[in-house]
Image (tube, rainbow, N blue to C red; front, side, top):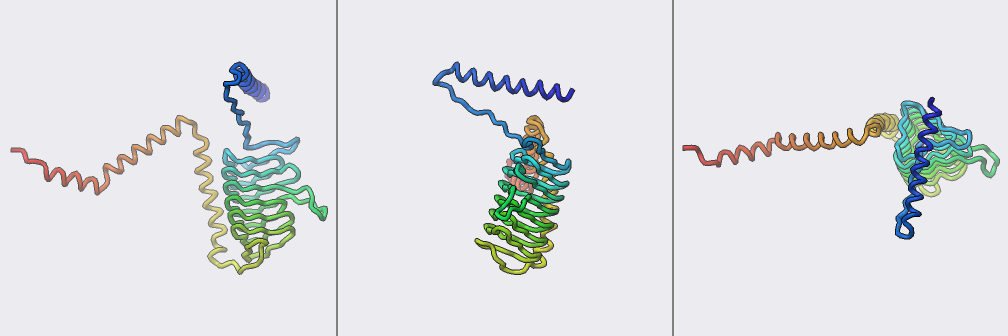
Length: 258
């Protein structure tokens, strides 16, 4: 039954697109042709299919392609691409990969090694980071726009600063901060930073649940919530002490009834 419904839905969509193309041809030179988007958040490559835990969050504009395993409580944010076509991408539990980040793999490198991308638990990967055939251990931290290349290994509680370039086969020891291009040792991780690793992971896991709930709402629910928020804002304005004082002041200046 499920396969039959899928086939019917597929042919209805194909028919709609065929009608769109026919309409464009009938309009001749005056038509405006817009390619219909076929974006799919989860996409197979041959026999390789993403495996996403039911408690993970994948933003609608993200792309999870091929042999990608995503653990519970992890979140893949808007505009991210995880492409596991030539090899495997594994993401542990509670990890957040933030907006516009790219995670790729390497079938092999110059040394002939097979290089999947392995990301542990409670890892924070900031916006626009690029990871390629590397390993990130639990509770490591990758700054915004950082690049980690083939064979690199970032150990637990290590930090790669924003904009850094970690070259091939570089190993960053636990508890160290590396930055620059190419990345090099800068200093040791502070106790405050060490405590932040788990805190950041929990905060993003909670925030992902909010976004997941919002993304399940239909258009009618979204419009209703907008009206509700506007009403609450107006009610709060009417109830504000400043406005009440103004009303009281105005009433005191009204002419008294004879």
